[in-house]
Amino acid sequence: MIAVLEPGCPMRHKAEVVRLLESEGLHVQVSELERETLVGVVGPADEALARRVRELPGVREVRMTAPPYPLVSRAWHPEPSRIRVNGTIIGGPELVVAAGPCAVEDEAQILAAARAVAAAGARLLRGGAFKPRSSPYSFQGLGEEGLRLLAAARAETGLAVVTEVLAPEDVELVARYADLLQVGARNMQNFRLLSAVGSQPRPVLLKRGMMATVEELLLAAEYVVAAGNPRVILCERGIRTFETATRGTLDVSAVPVLRELTHLPVIVDPSHAAGRRELVPALSRAAVAAGADGLIVEVHPDPERAVSDGRQSLTPAAFSTMMEELRRLAPALGRTLAGPSGDGGASPPA
Ligand code: PEP
Ligand code: MN
Image (tube, rainbow, N blue to C red):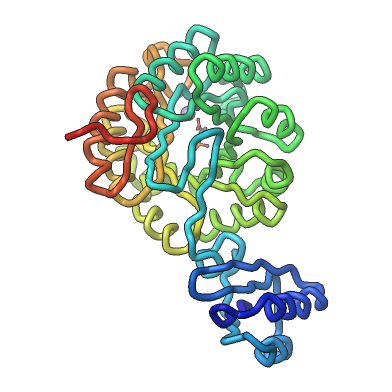
């Protein structure tokens, strides 16, 4: 249920609406918009209560249609959310790119990757220290040592760090090192993990499960926000379809669909969708053209020797070329992309 209050309605009227709803044990969210104030109710509300709210002074209308994910829905919060990760804002005019290897392998590798992606205009460094691998015999990540190496790369380059957390018991440890906590596709419906990342202050990058619908992704995001953390960024990373020419199928339409349904920022991972580095630049351009707020891209200083996902990892040179192309494309879409020096998100003169 959403109560729409008259524009300029006095504070005491708003307070009265909130008081009535809270006295019924309901959790409410108030959104102050330019032309109206919305008071949304989390959870079920019945017609009798709606009638009482409708009679209060200042209430213009009460809508009973509420999305199943009220806190992340655009119906409740029409203004897009901007989420700050260190000094970088995701969800504003700047396209924000996170880049780096699939996994942190050693000091030389992560430092080389960090320097290269910073020089090409990335704002965040990606790299897994805890890796979700299909096989128990594959490299599982360096664990805390990997987190330390990421922090050292941040100290040298100024990049913010995004890295995956696999289990609720690791959230505190990963949050000590990371600026943005990644919940991976395989964990999108790990509800205990969603609540755990929702109960700590770092922003969260929530990747869409490879067999999850857009609604399931939004419900997963709702878990994080309902647990107390409103700073969630969504990521489309390819879904499983009948197609075998690519590792996943990048669901480009999820980007405008999410834009319509939620106020949360949306970024795209072209690397896991494609599975092959040759396809990454085209998928990145498609994502940006569809309205994505940024990208997360795998880049490895020596992809042939990567311990994981080398086939889909760009070389530093290919990444730099792709960023130059995106920098030319951005202004046509009303966006900017940080320059090679990591400047303030301005596009170079044409
Ligand atoms: C990753 O980012 O390396 C990763 C494992 O991604 P996903 O969860 O999307 O498969
Ligand atoms: Mn990977």
